[in-house]
Amino acid sequence: QVQLVESGGGSVQAGGSLRLSCAASGRTFSRYAMGWFRQAPGKEREFVAAISRSGGSTYYEDSVEGRFTISRDNAKNTVTLQTNSLKPEDTAVYYCVADSQSTAQAMSVRGQGYGLDYWGKGTLVTVSS
Picture 1 (spheres, rainbow, N blue to C red):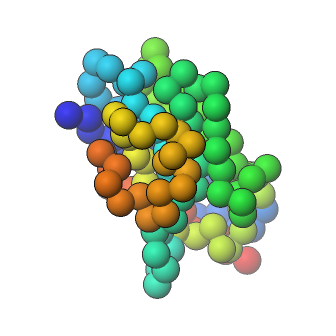
Picture 2 (picture 1 turned 90 degrees about the vertical axis):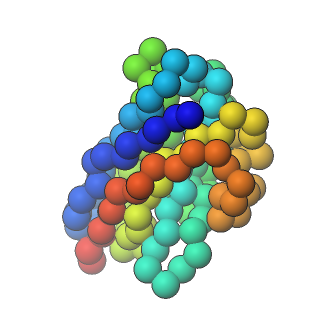
Picture 3 (picture 1 turned 180 degrees about the horizontal axis):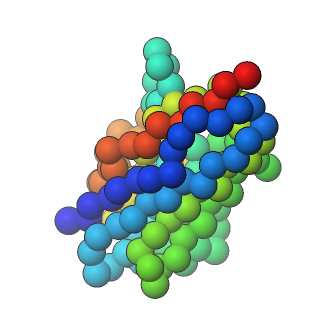
């Protein structure tokens, strides 16, 4: 069992940045592919970014490519999503996810994330224009 706790959300102006963090419990963090999904009001949950177990491979949704960066520190059991050049359309609740079986690449095409093992409660990002 893995528990995930997100932090770092908040309200920023368009063009600003936020650093979202996900702290994971457990002794085998490196066995999990990690990712971020988000859900905006009135919209379906969507994939944002994923990172492989070693941290060597990353995947991004097209609209955040070049603006967001996902990273992980397996020694600290943490995953980070650095969000830069934020746009109003980035406004959403951001969820950290972990999966014991999926690769990060597979996670990137899981649509709404159905079937992934563990989810945090989310952290809200609000971007104003």
